[in-house]
Amino acid sequence: MLFKYSYVSHASTEDFYKEVQVVFKNLWRERNNLGTFSLTTQLFTSEQIKTLRKSKKFKQLLENFINNFLQLEAEEQKEVLRAFIWENTISSRLSDINTRILCKEELPSSIRDQTKELFYYLYKERFRKKYLNTYYPIFYNRHRNRYCPFCGLEKIPAANSNKKREYDHILPKSIYPFAAVNLKNLAPSCIFCNEDAKKDKDIIFSTNINGAKRRRAYDYVYDGDLLVVDIRIENRTVFPNANGENSDWILTILPDEDKTRTWDEVFCIKERYIEYLDQHYNDWIKEAVGYCLSDSSLTDLEIKSSIVKMLTGLNTASNDNMESKLKLRFYELISSDTNSIPFQTIQTALNL
Image 1 (spheres, rainbow, N blue to C red):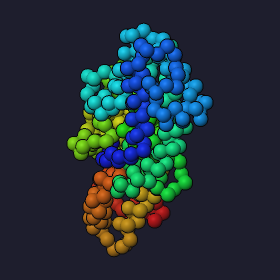
Image 2: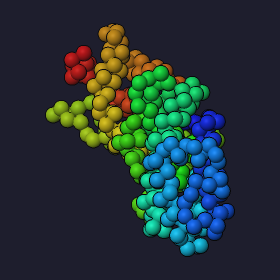
Image 3: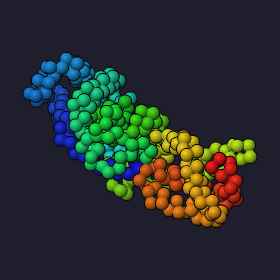
Image 4: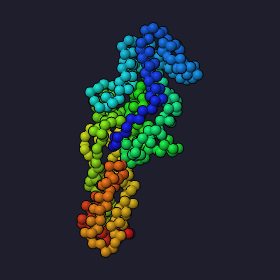
């Protein structure tokens, strides 16, 4: 992440996950005493039994899961329990590449679909609808920075907005379904990061369960775990050549290390930043040059001093979001590019 999200406790949302934990605990304790699924206080509280009696869909999905679990061999049952525990100790799974985690495809084949269907339902029909709507305004008002922490370009919806609220499942629920309703596995994000860039990418393994394990900081982190990144624009002249052509953008993310490479791969950062530069190229260059040429009596040297002044102002805001950092690096490129180009030539080329 580019800046820190503080974990915001939310009692009802956390209690829902705790109820799921209790059912798993009871199921493990009573696994040898149960033949098939039943609405018994050995597994459920009286309130849970009332809820299940009211919802045929919920009851059926839970029954399918529990019956398939009870038919597993003892070692397979242990693997399911390990998967539930490991998928919900999220911080250690991300911070230590040597810790093991079980994904859905490593569960016994006879329970994979039932696990996915149950936890998808729990997230979509109960967790999100009933709890996240009240959680989001509390979370939003607790954080000063309104930008998406994954890209730094887009803002997350305001607390009173009608826009869809996006939650990144840090461990994707399609791969790690047991973590689907754990609030510590959810981080508000922009729609582009969640739906267009990351989608169902596995942030732990780069390709598949046999692939290399990624390094990535946990989203609710201490400052020392944040991504401290910079962008370098290379091999690009700001102003078109004699044929009106520009060279391609070449962006380098610094430092070049495992965490920043994971960030780029998962959220398509370079691709999106280059697209952002293309979108704002004309406006930014005209803003900079127009500012510098506002006084026609200035010499080229004085104009270059004006650019330095602009850069100083941008630099004070460059850590708030990546838009300002990209703009800063762009104006630095303008400054270096004007060393050999008279501003009168630039003015004519841009029709300023």
